[in-house]
Length: 314
Image (cartoon, rainbow, N blue to C red; front, side, top):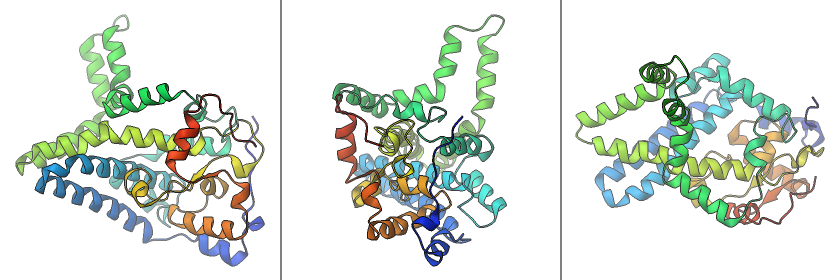
C-alpha cells in the first residue's frame, strides 16, 4: 500500500502562523456544539410557532444534523477539545457518535486519500454521472429512500430472505440491539415532545430532516469534497476540493466550514474553525491557485453531472 503524498506546514506557513492556526482550544468545541443544538432548538421553536415555516426549518435542522457529524469528525482528529478524554466525550454525549469505529476508518481515508486503498473512494468514483442519474439520486434522498436503505436496508433484506436457521423475530431483536442508540434517543425525544403536546414537531422537525434533507446535504458534501478528483494522484494540493459557500449555502448545506476540505486534507491538525484563516493565508501567498477550488456548490453539481467531463488534473 502506498500512502497519499503529504505536505509540510512549514512549506506554506511561518512558525508563528502555524502556531496560531494549530493551537488547541478548550472553548471553541463546546461553543460550536452548543451553537449547533441552539440552532436546532430555535428552528423547531419557530416551526411550532409558525407551522408554515416548517419546510425551511426541515432544511435548517437537517443541515445542523450534518453539523453534529462535522463536529464529531473534528473530534475523530482530536481537535474538538484540548483534552482528549473531553474531546471524545463531547462526540459521544452531544454529537451522538462513538469514535472507536469511525476514527480508524476515517484516518485510513486520510492516509490513502484518493488512492486505491481509500475506503471512501466508492463515494466519489462513480462521478461524473448523467444529469438524469443525479436527479434520481436527489429524488431518492428527498423521499427518504436513501435513509431507509442506509438505516434499515440490511434488515429488510434478511427479513425478506432469512438465513437458514434464523427466525424473523431473532433478526429483529439483533437489529434492535445494533440500532439501540438511534431507537432509544428517538423514542425519548418523541416521548418528551408528546408530553409537551408537540409530538408532531419531533416527527416533522427531527425525523423528517434526518430522513430527507440530511441524506441530500451529506451527498452534496461527499460530492463536493472528492468527486472528479483524479485517483492515485501524486499532488497533495489536489487530493480534495474546497468549495466557496455563501451565507445561504452555509446555513442550508455546508455547516462549520466543511467546505474547506482541501485545507483539511493538507493540514489535518487544524480545527474546523481555523480552516477559513488557513485558506486566506494560502490565497494571499498564491497557493490556492494550485489547489482544487470551485466557486460554489452549483458549479460542482454542474461538473458532476456532465457525463463526458474528465476528472481534474493532478
